[in-house]
Length: 319
Image: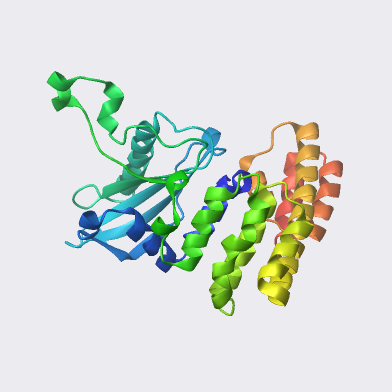
């Protein structure tokens, strides 16, 4: 459920969901000498996520499969800290999540060596990054016993240090990084037209319009800006096309809000009446987006004698 509680993580996942955009990002992040041993252009995006539930509010992650130049498989693991001060135990968290990646690889049938996993930290907190990038430094000064230390280094991409000179060449990626960098700025609404203007020349591309839809959804869900102001910016920069994109997203968000309320009403009734709701029922409810069906299920939640009866009706509604 990361995307539901974490609009920053959702936007990053949308931004890097296309291979060419993700490749452009890692070409800008991974040092050139290391890139020579990887085929970044052919990376594959995984749906797997490994961050602990209680850290969703400040961390998000993405996993990418790549191949080394010797054709051996490898991973790039991206951990995004989007709020708070630098996490002093970030190296430990990276090791923890990389271990889960390797465990998953082993359970799927490991052939040969464990896949190399390159850890990358994307940071957008309140202060500049000041944490060591070496895992071994978590143990302090133990030079005489260093033989026994596990160690690795992660790559840091600190958005607070991002400048115009360091922006990726890809216009969608560059705009996405600037949006993530400035989303919490108190002058964000004044900055937004300038941030979006570079996309004007590619407005006829479907990819650009889809990205603008994601931008509107992100800004609406992660700020307290008035929707009229957001619409005004879209019209100012992109004229009628901007207005049309905004209205389409606004309609979608309104529908999602109604669905969310209807679903929560069902869950509230079931919780009050039966206390524990089986995870299978919750998963099914979260996959229903039709308001009419949810209204019927709400009535059933009120009238069902027990959870089994509700579950039977739920299954019938899906067939």
